[in-house]
Length: 467
Image 1 (cartoon, rainbow, N blue to C red):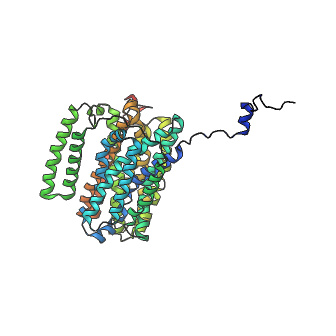
Image 2: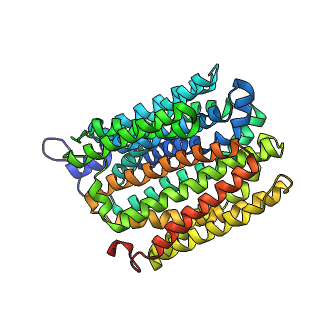
């Protein structure tokens, strides 16, 4: 019978391994926690792009200011978000995604507190600008974090889909959440609700892996001229008058300088040659038209329900529930259709549905029951939701893999800028007569989508990248 003991009185290593505890492997950061942190940040910055609309009348009553002031509450955030998104991807690479995300989330949280505590309209608009700057940092850094947390391509694709769905759901729920918070609490609540979410994001980032810093060129002259051109153009549309004409002149000069700089820089913030690809040009134009229709209609009808029909913020928010409740589901269906038939068909069909929905809404007037208006908003929203995933896929297919991040930045920046300018233009239209301005806004949106819908239909067959 063996005693399992060696001559020196020790047990064999195999027996020791059975009796002694194995050394613990070092813990690795949880990919799910990283995904949660990235999703929360993306959802938060998307939510703030739409949650404000329903609260605008309450802000006007509390802080004063006319239609132009309320437009700036929305556009100050959207403009900063859109314009700086052109460069913040490169900043995220230089600083490391984890550091950039922590910085963006921290500043966004502090700026949200400043918005909630704003004593007057200029202070609120200033804090919204800071929010927009931080949001521009959060978006690309959050996606970079999700990508680095999943090494397996299949798992990474599912994680990115979850991340994207979080942003879509936040945009869709923004008007409803804004109405609930404004009624149950105050308009300041739509900003204070960001504070615990921001704190949770920073807590989750403690467990996230530290990202490596990578050299990435920054085109500061191009970025500065882009910001000046877009801000001046928006100011010209919103303010009008002599100051508006002066701002328009500044916008033209800055835009010319931007194009000249981008044509000569070795690493431009927007490579102009990218637009020589027909698919890229069509998808960017389509994304811009969709944003004009969707974001501007949410803005216009948020004011219509409250200022024209006299509904509360909560009632106005609930009126958007039928259209927003179906957006996420439609996004998923659109992705499947694009995978099966290529992006051209769902893009063209989606824009056709949106155009029909916008034209039907021309029959809306002050006496139309709110429930009827809410149902009439559904086709427009569904058409836009059917269009966005295929156009994004077409954009990604049309560029080399190493330029995918840049292309995504250009597409999203164009969409946000178009939404900001749409709000500026349509806000000016409804200020001279609400119902007449609203109908003109519907016609303009329908015309833009009709043009881009025809362009989309003329893309190449099953795969638009063939163009």
